Image (cartoon, rainbow, N blue to C red):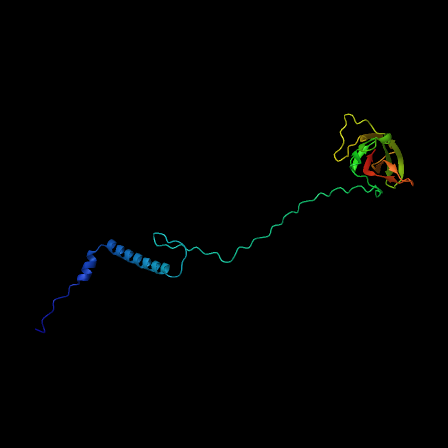
Length: 216
């Protein structure tokens, strides 16, 4: 029995492999490779902390969070330009005895006004109609020299309107004059003095001063 010959072994695995077409073997290898790659991707995406939303296919999108506080950059602002106000004329000397506005007012010219010859001067006095005294008008230059003095009689008040603040009496009347100054070759400053009376020494009393610039 021991010397009996064994029957030859049949290689069934090799026969089976020969029966499988090469295309089927390649497909199995491809499917196995895809399974391994999917496993590696799942392990790589599953670890670590993430922020953001996960898509339906399992892909996670990371959105970095901003760190620190935003610092505002300073902006340069242009300062508004300021137009300086014109300085008042200093041609008038200190008023020795200012008149109250209820007693005497000059309506024209206005202080610091630029005028031309003839200079139209007008105003009102609350008592200048008494005995037709009127007012005196003195023209004084920047050197405090009196150029001329004019006596202005009161005028009729019919159809005239007195300025606000003037005390209206039976002797309240207006006055007016056109003053001519010679030899004006350039803008020249003058001070107009209007008053009703003077002291024994000749100093005006109850004075209204108006600085003007006379143009050539």
